[in-house]
Image 1: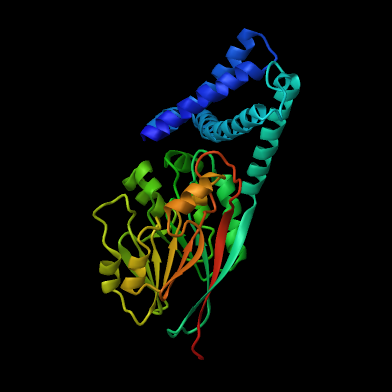
Image 2 (image 1 turned 180 degrees about the horizontal axis):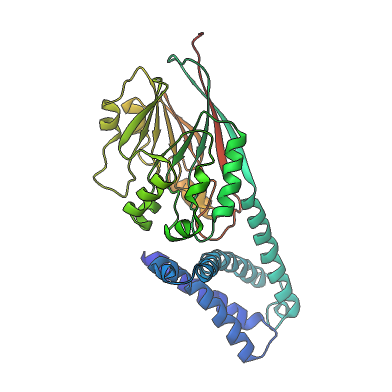
Length: 363
């Protein structure tokens, strides 16, 4: 939390100083532009403090998008000016280009606009990830499973966006839909006002989901009620069976320190049946293998959403994205179909997984 508070402040000072030098404007105009940028960044704390819920929905949406997007813009502005500083030191960039420079201003602005235009359209494009899951256990038939994580529905991912995702899922004609947490972003309020639960009613397959950390941020009772209204089968330290053949286990989120262990959840399951674990945060992956889980779906990491944060998540997690195998257990850690905050994907992708589950035994 200290880093989260201090680093943006230092970034604002650094970028503000560069803008003061760079902009070919009078002092009052420079000050106004810098203060506007600071205000945009600070509006992020309206989101964190929960004050958006007291505002009209249309205004809350605008402020949420400004605040969360500004932090990402700030990150890339810091990186840009760091490159400019290094280039200036080795005299690749003349001083006239970085002080009161219209050309320098337009070049920096154009570069940032190009990067974020790419990031926005890359986010809007949802990548279909096909995977095969095979097992020695007996299955009566092949199953098609659509797997989603991290929808983050709320002030930025609205009902209209959700409707598009529901159409994508239905087009796959799945037997079942699995969601590994963070369906809700930070508040249930925009979902209720937009009637987003009704969109889930259009799904043509049963939906099973576990909780994520953001369901705790939005309020667990409210989140559980939304799941119920959306006809999503919530598995919170609980299990269910599909066709008396597949066991789907939903683990409560790591936020709940009293949640059951994977071993305890699996102890109550029939080990002759194929087991799928929904566990939002991909920590301690080896425990699923030791407990005898056949497949685990996780999310949470977003793979950092934007580069170079993706390098941070790759370093933090044993697997921060993609397919992974540990012993006899297969894993998939999804970067998510949705996103937290600013709708940019730079060096990462928004995705949905289409899994084909089949038995290696001849039927």
